[in-house]
Structures are given as structure tokens and as C-alpha cells.
Amino acid sequence: MIKTKGTKIFMALMIVLGMMACNNAAKEEKGQKQTSAKFILKGKIEGMDSGMIKISDKKYRRNDSAKVVNGEFTLISDFPEPSYISLFDDEKGHIGSLFVENAEFTLTANVNNLRETKITGGPTHADMLKFEKMRKPLFDDEWRKASRDNYKADISKERRAEINKILDKFDQKTKSLELKFIKNNPKSHYSAWLVFIQCSGASAAKKEELISMLDPSLYSQTYIKGVRENLALEKSTEASLEEFVSTASNVKYKVDEQFNGKALKDVVYLGSFTNNNICALKKDGSIQIVSPKGKLVKVIKTEIKGEAKSVAIDAKDNIYVLDVLVKTEYRKIRGRKMAFSSPIGVECVCYNVNGEKMSRFSCPDITTASGAKIADGKLLLSDYSTQKIGIYDLNTGKMLSKIGDMRPCCGILDFSVNDKNQIIVANLGAFRVQSFDLTGKSLMSFGKRGRELDAFHGCCNPVSVAGLKNGAIVTVEKDPTQIKVFSKEGPSLIAGIDELVKGCSYIPMAVDGNDNLYLASPDKGVVKCISVN
Image (cartoon, rainbow, N blue to C red):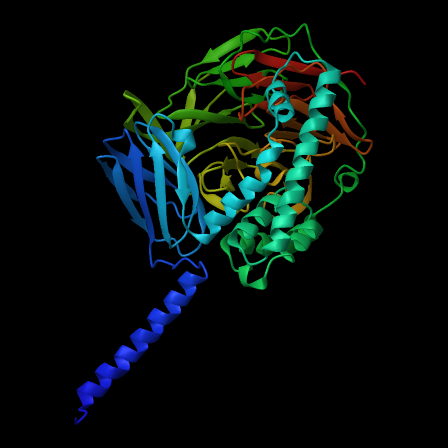
């Protein structure tokens, strides 16, 4: 038979296809799952005839979705590297969480028990399930009871110490398992995720040690790349607590039982005037001016288009209210129509102390204003949405500079300005207190994650921070509430503070000209702490 040019090409193609089939067969024999060019999730939810499964993803900000028809759906997207996401339906709520990547996944669930949703597929998700199986025995009855009691305000000191001991033991065992997994799986993207978690609140030296446990092929992974890029700056600014407050003596406080602040509820932000009156911004946008004894001096009604989030006071006692403009959407959740608001921009409205409106201007390049202060003719605003602090010209509203690399959490990011015009940030997602000058240049930082007195506990802390006149630092932690003073003598805890908020919530704090502290609770009003030195 004569072989034509076309016949030769056909035979060569068949040989190549045959080799590929053999390779695939060999991989399947070894149990290696084939990688998909796309993320494909095939789901079956019993009892859910219709709906819309959506992705909630902070990393890629995807909004992909898939219709549920007769309990089944197929969701297709593109994730070039693994990312942790959640799935939800507007009516049914949370469906499940997984580590996505471009591979095939399956989901099985029952609409009446979505907590038992099962998701399989993808090597990173498989590694996560393997690790969760390793950790499951740690969630024993002792841990469950300690976790419940941890948020009770009326427990004894003895029980508090016992709870801390149990939870510390759990944390240590979890970290030990994480390190064991990383050591045994240095090329796993889930190991990179565990390193990223352990780097939160760790020193620069500890971060280097953790990253070195990974295979270098993961250094370009988004989570790890971000940590490595910030290491050089952290090394140059990281300080011990002693260095940060090297000249500051401790300031002791007690709760002022004479302060009449129980009626000052629904306060979302606090500031102080030059005469030591307190400026309390309420949820409805109104301003309450309160005397040092807790007497209501004046109420100012403000023009708020969206949501009142923060307030700043200048040297002439002018009041700058930050109005967060929002877009509202309505969704049906479990049969109920509910409103969901998302921030779209910020405007600043200025009033004098008599309540007369003076100006209104936009604050570009941010969408929220979780914190606000004024210093040296500049308006400083923290934005948890874009993870930065913007520095604006107070007269024109023009952005002059910005401080990036903020790690907000739970919609919280706040800061203060000390007597040296240094910005002191409660960078809660990093478990750090950081300082900057008014140009945005990084100066110093301290802090670590933990339950020790010199550390910050929980998923993210501190939520508020302030500098005292002698250079000492006051921090506020939530969940449970703890108010600490950091000085050259070390950290000290202010006694007598009840639980001010429920769960992962912001606690506003203001310091007056006499270094008295004011703390706001939405339900319990405003608490005042006075110095007893």
C-alpha cells in the first residue's frame, strides 16, 4: 500500500493520541485525578427544587452562579490557583465551603440539613478534608463547654483562667497539627494556606521560618507572595513592646461609677472636644454632645444620605461626620424579603459646635469610613473595604497620600493620632499596633496573636487603639472585651469592664484631654474609665 502524506499525518496523530491515552490510564491507575481546564461543580441538593447557587469569594471577587433545577446544578468558573470560597443561595443561605481550583467537584446535600453538605474534588480541597479529619478529635466536650463559657460576662476569675488554659491547649495542638501537615506536604496549596494562617500575628522571623517549610514552587502563590513582599518592611519597623513605649510609665484606670452613660446607646463612634466634652455619633446620624459627667449637653441632627460611620473633631471643635453612601438590594432569604446594603462611596459633612452646617465634600478612592481623625490640617479616614487609610486635605478633600497593607477584619479598621501627630493603627487582622507619620511612612509596630496579656486574642484584635499623653498605648479587644494599657512596665488589664459587644463587633473608644477613656456599647451605653495614678 502506498502511504500518502495525509496517511502519514493521520498515523502520527493516532500514535500521539494513543500515547496520551496510555499516560492518562497510568495516572488513573495511580489514583491521580485529572485536572480540568475550568472549575466545574456538579451538585445535587435533595428537597431543593429551584434556586440559584452563588459564589462568595473575597480573593477573586467572583459573582458566578448556577440555577438549581429539580435539585441539580452545574457551576462553572475559572480559578487559576486554589482559593477558599463559600457557596450560598439567597433564600436558603449558606450551602457549603470549599477550596476551589480548576478541577471537577461534586456536591451532595439535603436542604433540611445543609450543615452536612459533602463536597469532594480537587487536590487542595482533598488536603483540607484530610486535615480536618486529623483535627476532629480536638473538638471534645471540654473544648465545647469552654468555648461557650468564654463569652459569658459573669464567670469567675478561676473559671476564666481554666477556660484560657483549655483554649490555649487546643490552639497549641491545632498549631502542632498544622506544622505536621505542612512538613509532610510541602508542595500542597493547602499547606500554603496553613502557613498563611500561622503567619497572621507572627513575628517577621517566625514568618520566614514558616515560609521556608514550603516548597519554593509555592512562593509565587498569592497568599504567600503577599506575606513575602511585606517581610522586608516588617523587619525594618518591627519593635519590641519596650521599644514602642520606651519612655511611658503605666497608667492605672478604674471604671467611673458616677458617669451617667447608660442612656447613651446606639453609639457607633466617639470623639472628644477641647473642653473634654464627648462627641457621640449615633447610628441614626445624630450627634450627642456629652459632658464629662454624662449629662447630655446638646443634640445635633445631621444630613446623612447613607450610613453614619465615624466622626472627627478639629482644633476649633468643628465636627466632621462621615457619611457612607450605600446601594441597597433586596433578596429573599428563607421566605423573607431582606435588604442588603453595600457601600459605594464616602462624603464628609462639616458642622460647627452649634450644629450649623459649614460644608460637604466627597472623599475619593474609598468606599467606607470605619475610622476618622483630624491632624495638622489633614483628614484621615480608614477604609476596611479597600484596606487602607486615606490622608486628605481638610479643606479641599483631595487625597494627599495613603497607607496600604491594612488587614481589616469583621468590617473593622480604626486608628488614632497621638500628641506627636503619629498615626497609631489597630491593624486587627495582623494582630498588630502600627505607627506611621502623616505622610504615610511606616515607623514602628508591635504585637502578636495569643491569649497572653502581651498578645491579642480571637480571630482579629485589637479593634481600637489610642495614645496617651505620656506615650503609653491603650488597646481594646472584643469577643471577650479586654482593655489594656501598654507601657514600659509591660501590659496591664483594666478591671471592671463588662462584655460591651456580642461577637465580632467594633467597640468605639475616645480619650479626652485628661487621658480619661470612653468606651461605647450599643446596648449598655458609654463607659468611662478614669486614671487612679
